[in-house]
Image (cartoon, rainbow, N blue to C red; front, side):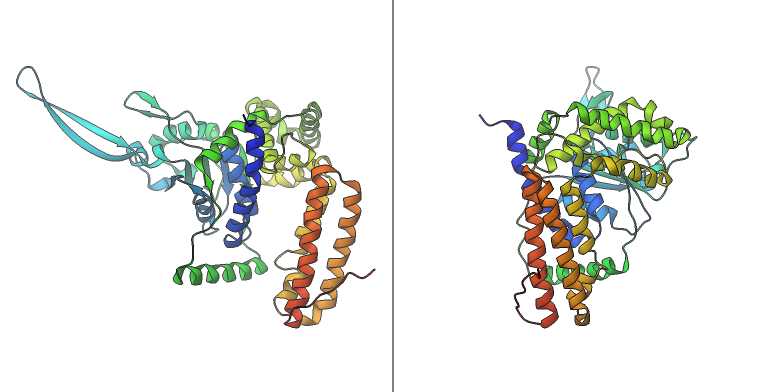
Length: 408
């Protein structure tokens, strides 16, 4: 019989394909999509901080659509005025005779909405009515929901929340905020990303109007459950635990007042390793490694002003040949970058773009020499991507197919 862990790592390639397709339509939302996957697999809630209109709900829903059979429920929390509105799909009244000849009337409530969802998106969560906050907290904890005096288990896999603000530090929402394990700031798109967004939007609408086929890549609920069951089986080496502790201490050394909360939160410390395991699994690995430590950037801040300190502290711990290679390729293909400009029609900058690509190729070759195993294979994939992109840049600039060889 197949090992659940090996089965789960085999699903990772499918997850990456789905992610690429979702991001092709939801421009600039890489961190959001990855955070939702981490939430789905680890079972820990995720929170997105950002202004209205940044496609937060749309991005989560787009990913939910790629899970066959998944129920997605989203609610603008200030408009939910009762627990019933959040959980009850329908209500009926039943009459039954009593032994005394009278009638007994009973109200039956059929659970639905958030109580039957696999992914719940609670928007503007801090503005929720006090009367529904306990139910929202129950959902965030993953314990089920209270109904008619009993705790009812729900199929929830990921609780996602969002707001354009954080709760008041002295308010009564501290318990909810502390459970938002995975935290990310969602920024407006840059100019280049906005151009890419319009192209993707037009392509999507044209595709829909022409009766285009449904997306080929989907996960089943069973595959998501397989990933969730395999997550605790991912190995966590002792040196990874020690590195996380070193990062904790380094943050306290830099700002004891700002990060003492982190050391005091033992629940978060445990959940960090759930998320690290989930990240390794998403990458198709059965062991947590240094390259997974970058997700600490989503786990160790309490105020957005702390994010630069966290990023600066974590960076030295998670640098590997592969992470450096990925940074190089990401920088090369930024929407506002030189390569994008040439592909967009600026032919006069072709030579500069090719030079930039070839400098990246040289660095990738150097990093390949330092890598081994799966990291080397991944860098090889990046090298192939760069080679294909070089041809695409030249073809776009010259308006024809063209083969270019690297200069020595």
